[in-house]
Image (cartoon, rainbow, N blue to C red; front, side):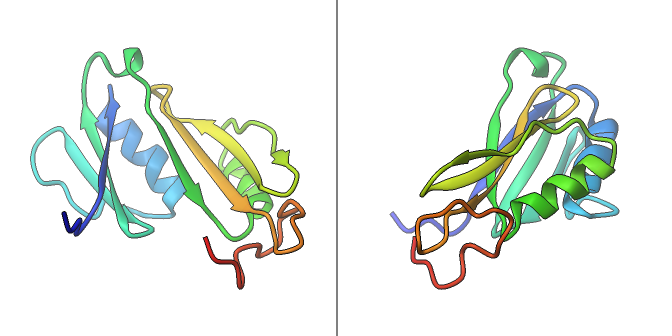
Length: 132
């Protein structure tokens, strides 16, 4: 099998409110694609995040994790938007991360990998020169 793209579907109860939330987090004014009524898509990091309107969305939350260069900077930026973010957690020698929940309880988790010395990212550009 030769996979050519990846789309992650996230159920949401209010597509318009969710587009505002994800648009702020992804720093986008609008979705990249709205292929049909009740669906909006954002292309981020080489994958597509597809918001699907579903009245039962809060019964089936999903978790999506994104690697970023500076988790501390993203934590501060997203918190400044008024979005409730969890604390930055650290697994020494592996990863620093935090979670934020969208209006329907889906978890958006951002992380930075440890640097080559095995220390947590501490907000540094920890992916530089690291093979994953």
